Length: 187
Image 1 (spheres, rainbow, N blue to C red):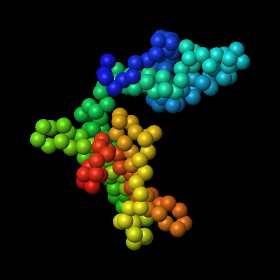
Image 2 (cartoon, one colour):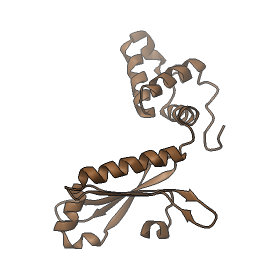
Image 3 (cartoon, rainbow, N blue to C red):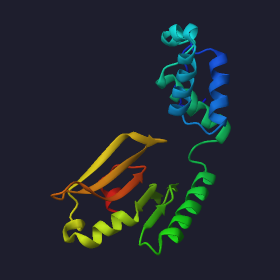
């Protein structure tokens, strides 16, 4: 078992693990599987009373833990080279797709070489964000960066870069990175 995987509580029975593994294999996320299972239980008046029983209906936290464990067992370690190869392919496809609309993506792969450690950086600037950059002269002056802790996957924080404008807050970019240091964000 990998150290970052939180062990499942004893009350999460094998039937639930099998049931949720089946949901995950159908490309459901942890949240999708949790709500799907909860909805199934709510449809039956007999099982409706069982929603409070964690042996029958695990909490969202337990479902997330099952999902993380399932990802590691079935999809390999999340920072495997295959993940970066797939991510590079998606970035190339997005750059080709949005090149006529001035959108752009950038990826710096994660590397733990002794001589040169590179942090993961994925920067996304879709056509709307590019349009904001071209229209508003002050777009280069970042007003604030919002770190959204609830969106991080595989412990890579997600940053949303915004610029204040009288009408509303306008998006400038999205960064996903493996490090929150100033040098990483400036690179």
